Image 1 (cartoon, rainbow, N blue to C red):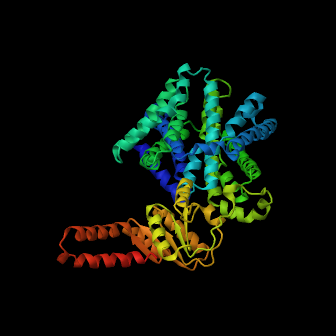
Image 2: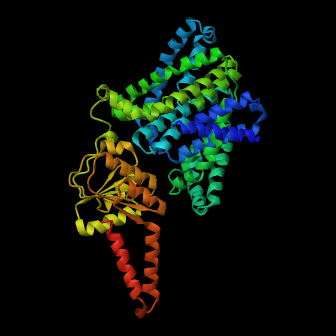
Length: 547
């Protein structure tokens, strides 16, 4: 691979980041720059392979985080299906009108070809949407989960189209894939034994690229579908989240190659650019359709709008559909470049829209609220927290321990918040007062009822970014009580204190002090335990600063 590719990609990514846009737009620009320099995609087979790996690992990572039950929710399967149908019904007449107005690329196209174009333009970008959600930390938010569910349904529609368009009937052995769930215990046993290092990464790559992509492709199915299915199969394992984090940088690096290959498809003509810009005007229509449809399923207008803006772009799967259509002769070859440019323009439009969606919603809130249907969706109603004195955000091992310690002194005045429903059910079974909610999600704070007697908030979430976000939201709500937080690294303590946290508890320092105290108490003679007793008292004082 030529050094110029890496250097230009890095420079373009950094320049775009400096003006507040996602780096992926810079990678698209870098692809066009490299094409101008004479670098052709056909001469870079390795780049294309890395791009394919990026999309495969992206779908595998989505599967690892997916609750398959979410696809059976009406707002997901019905919402995506209705949007696809309405998009085609709306886009085809608009494309026909543009052709009648004299746009030569559309003039000669028949209804079947216009329908195929509308189908390709109806998809939203999984790559872009996931990147935006990850950057915002909203992957687990309600609007994020709905958007991801819709994207997966769209991916399934695209995979079905690609499978049918191949004209090849999948192997009869493809039915054997229905037995994959029976292999789940064996796969989980291997998952348990790979540990937490490089074997975990290798296990993930084997599952995504061999058991998923290669096996499905060998049976006549799309390899990306295989990666998604295997990811979903592994999603229930306790180390699924750890595996997703281990593969994160592989996925990110390979996706850089994906965006480069889009730009390397070639430079468009002036008329192609004009048409691509006109096609981007369809994006607001996509957003409006999504807002209307999602509110029909009783989601709040704010949730519907956030999800709709996340889906307000064109998709890499649209490019894939166009590539298949041009290779089959169903569309003229120049349409691949037009859709590539329209995709790039849609990203340029979607990036600032997603960055300012909050202020846009505030401006039109009164009108949007009128679209809401009552009663609201069960997951989108206000969160009733009662009137606690102590609030614990994050009910893992540390949060649970803090809850039990507080309950021994202030029983009935404590509330825990946990985003995993299965953990919420477990805590409730043990008699703890816990409600479901994700404190790293903006939706949670929008729906949270006020607690006038709240005195202390304990931030016990495992990620520093989540705790810092929670502090920012508490400050926006003008919370006047005390805030305590856990940290794993010393440098995180300073940022939390600067943001308004009153007490910071370093887990590693406390663990070291507790470990020494335990050793002194258990192994040294009584005459030598005075220092251990003093250390214990110091540790207890430090712990008491949390409560």
